[in-house]
Image 1: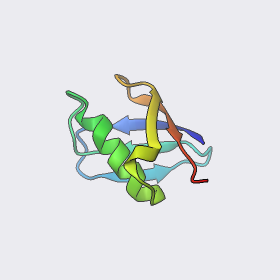
Image 2: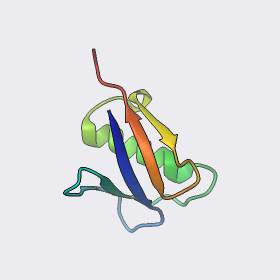
Image 3: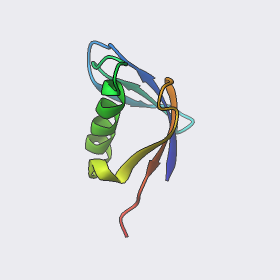
Image 4: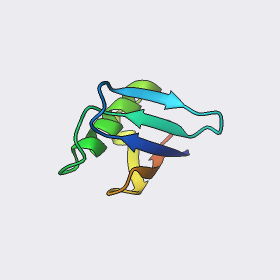
Length: 75
C-alpha cells in the first residue's frame, strides 16, 4: 500500500492527521536534519497503523516535506 504524506518538522507535538483524499499530514517534534524527522515519521506511522517500523519505507521524498510511503501488508 502506498500513501502520500506531508511532513511538518519542528512541530509542538507528534500527530498523524488523515485528509479526506486519504493523504496524511504528519507533525513531528524532530528537526529535519540528519534524517531525524524521517525516523520520527516512520515511528509515528508504525504506531498509527499498529505495525512494525520495518514494514514502512520512504520511497520518494527523503529530503522533502512531500513523501510517498510504502507500507508492506502482512501476508
